[in-house]
Image: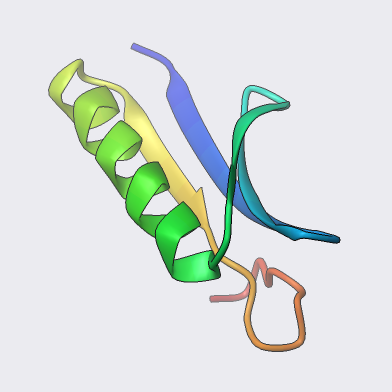
Length: 66
């Protein structure tokens, strides 16, 4: 199976989840975007995919060293 990547990113009016380079929904909070990403990631795990979820810290930057 493949790799499913979910990256939570800031937008001017809220947050979104990038998956395969596309964002389909907007969320008012980072926490809401995280919950949506984790729900999608759970399904991907059940389908046998490797899963990566990336959430930026307070400074808005995701770190690859975490």
